[in-house]
Image 1 (spheres, rainbow, N blue to C red):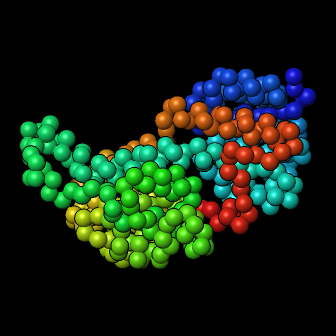
Image 2 (image 1 turned 45 degrees about the vertical axis):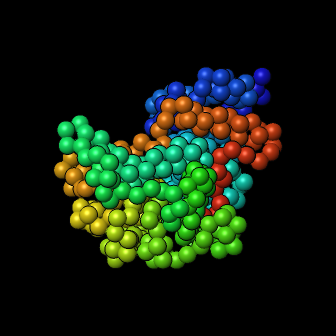
Image 3 (image 1 turned 90 degrees about the vertical axis):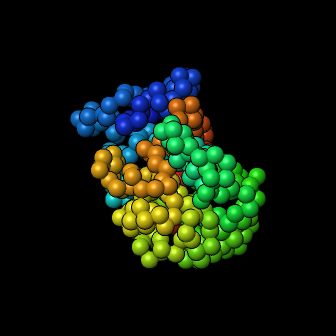
Length: 336
């Protein structure tokens, strides 16, 4: 039985069936009055009729206007994968009123980490190239088929960024006995050391790592941080894994160096999606390419709905959320 608490479910571009199990939606219906609950965006005129009585909004990106016009709002739960940009959401108003701004980003960590590891193994052992050669009748056996390959065991691995994605990936590397270097200017060295990684500068990480995972969230200060000069520091034959956002890399420079065989790359995110059919990265040697698929596994996406319902349950009980990631003023204003 609800008490007239209104929760708007306006999750477009995500389909409701993509992120909610039926039992989770039913749980939510038992706690609140759900509005809209459709697979298309709520029209502005419909939103205007209800905005004065909303307790929470579940959305994929912020498109609901000034928070100051939502007098009863207690929570924004974003299912798009990251906090809304400060360019579209008034965080000052949210923080001053104690409105929770939450993102489902933690749901993606395990999925993306698994894919990142798989793609790196595919590149380091030339699994894709070996398969394609076999299909073409050009396979090379034993030693000849392993020229330029390497195993991940006991290698030095670099993490650029040590947020939730890195913390999901690190345990997957433990069986390989890797030494992990980490560069994250938003975290103190002592914290990184306590996580079992070695804090280093970015240039050292690039020069010393056999595998480099790009895991940082995008911000104005790290746009194209991996430029031509820095990418040129990567050891020949190493693997660069572009996993979080293409924003961090000078993609033209990356394409040039990979096409020249300087190092290998695995890429799940691109500066333009869909990637143009004639983009030269498609034909670069040693690449493993993925169409932004790392975080889109059907079963695991439904963890988003469970997290939304769990956190709304605690918020309605006057308790802090425990599942989704809360916006922090020190971080959110630095987001791209």
